[in-house]
Length: 274
Image (cartoon, rainbow, N blue to C red; front, side, top):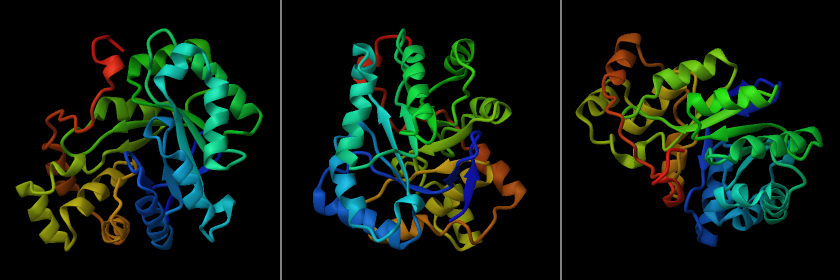
């Protein structure tokens, strides 16, 4: 599995398994086991997914040494508003059955809260309970606000990104500032899998449209965490390192952008300018 080096020197796999809304125990164990057997080492969850306990149980069953795994979780909005970041983090570790996580993220930039949350994450980084810290769903203005209050640059910004929503300006900003972009919903929840352009390119490269979309993101320098609970699709999503998309085809995929948001904004942020 290919890796990138984050701005604090820690390595992170380019490909991981997203675990959003995976709350069935048998399905979770099957998915994580299939992913591990296919070479995945990064598993992405969050307190809001309500599956950290299941993820911890599934991870404990793996024969993979802990130091080879890369586990990500995130602090949710209500914990930020309550100022209970320490409590939320401790509960996540307990549910995951871990002494540390490899990456801890602020899930959303809650107005008036995320700067204080970031300072709490800095403490987790300092005491080793988080090997890297970062953010999710942050726009340039949010990242600029963090720069004003902290000398620690987020290691990762996890954002929705795929051929139908290519956040080029934000990605370039992150690249220029040493922040690794990790794309969630990189398959746009299936929205481009029947797209004519992606199907033609799939035929050209003898790969599926999903694999072409993931490869496009990887060639952009992004990491990807496609979500699936189907072992065959999990294995298929890993087959993105055995081909390369030509420059002219990369440019064609770029033109598919329509700022299409496949994932939803949380209800508690929909009516405010976050």
